[in-house]
Length: 145
Ligand code: DHK
Image (cartoon, rainbow, N blue to C red; front, side, top):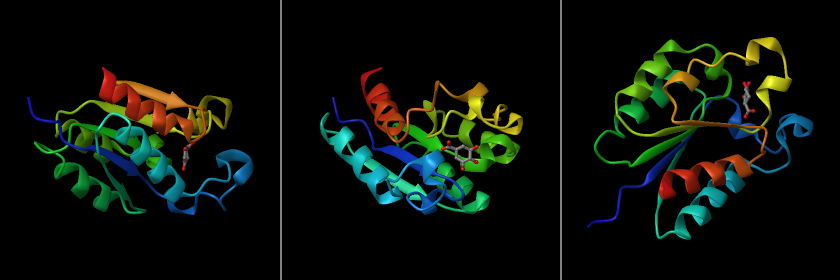
């Protein structure tokens, strides 16, 4: 049997500012650290990732469309689009892949507007509040399920 395709790791708006953005909420690791953690986690299982970050909803949607038939799963931290974007949710259904929604912070312990996610109902799993370890857990889950 051939090796499954890469896992697509997507980060939405403002996650390029990790490390400097509200470190008391999001920690001190940078987006590069997150990508490296994902890469190392996948490599432990002989697997690869593709990483993409954008502050633009349309660019994220275009990238998700290209995952169809190539990538084997999606790990996504949609940032603020979690709480607002029907279009992102509609796009995520298209590739017919398992999805893990990741939040660095515990969104349920924060403002009420962060308690609702448009993505959770179509996700296979949701991780919140584990810091950047949540990305590693998501990768490991997708590989081992
Ligand atoms: C990241 C964001 O940018 C916020 O808009 C979400 C999420 C929470 C996180 O915890 O990673 O509300």
